[in-house]
Length: 86
Image (cartoon, rainbow, N blue to C red; front, side, top):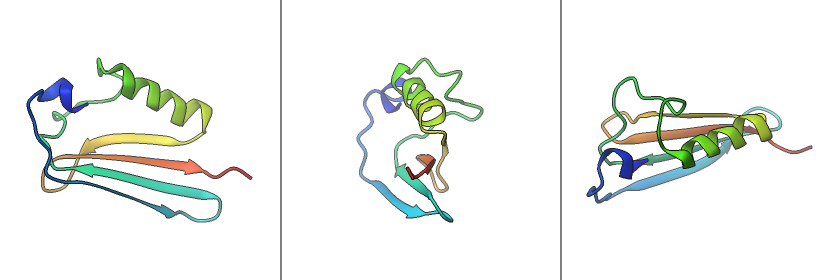
């Protein structure tokens, strides 16, 4: 994703975490301090094949939800809500 918008960007901070959401689900966050995604950007409209594949896997194969957008304070935030296997 970063290569698509800013090929020479060096990230100083990438952070992530996971936490349970209710019963049987997990919420994942990955945040960076890069240039972020342009306003109005979406995975579906992206030319980035890797993100489209990730979105398909999360939503179709894992019955989850993947979102990518601007991080508060700059950068990118990628979140995934995934049901846990029973």
